[in-house]
Length: 265
Image (cartoon, rainbow, N blue to C red; front, side, top):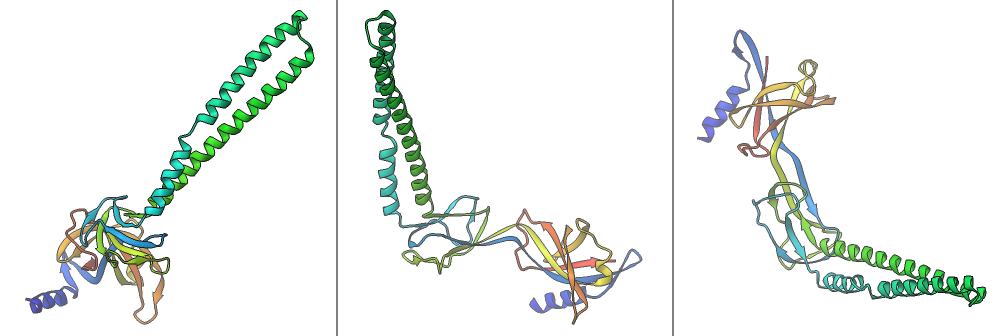
């Protein structure tokens, strides 16, 4: 069977006559447009492998979790502080009370029953209380920012998929220690769009343009694509230029690395 396929592929690489035109076939291969070595920015021990090799995952789906006991404790402590608003309520009550006292003293001063100095002293206390309230509110906002930071630090212990695709490799094992020098935890591939690469003569490349539709054969099946890249350098040994043709693979029929054939009249 393999011998027959090899003979067919060899025969397909020769020019053929189609509708009175000589069609020149050019072999190539297809690869995924998006491929990622997913890594973590944290150091720690892998405590959960949430996917298997070959699984299809959505963007943002958890792949691997690192130990996070310390980060969880820090987040709970910061959350406890962030939820405390007693100092703000106390400062608001003091501002309200002093404002009432200033208003009363203002009436007494106007009626001659209190000295202006007493009013000035109470107004100064009121201004200080308002400044203290503003400071307490600022501290509360700072605690909210610390809470957000603690949550981010906790979330970083979970490695998530950067895009929707297949888990091609899982180079790490449960219980393995991950460091900055060995941060890769998964290899992901998006197979929804593939890109075939061909080496064409310069004369053929001059006839092409970005976005131009082309017909090609992918793993023995006819397929429609468009030119996504035209190389700017010529290979001196073969006198060819690299051309890439992008095609939709939403059905997942073709796999990255599959053989392709481009036929140009």
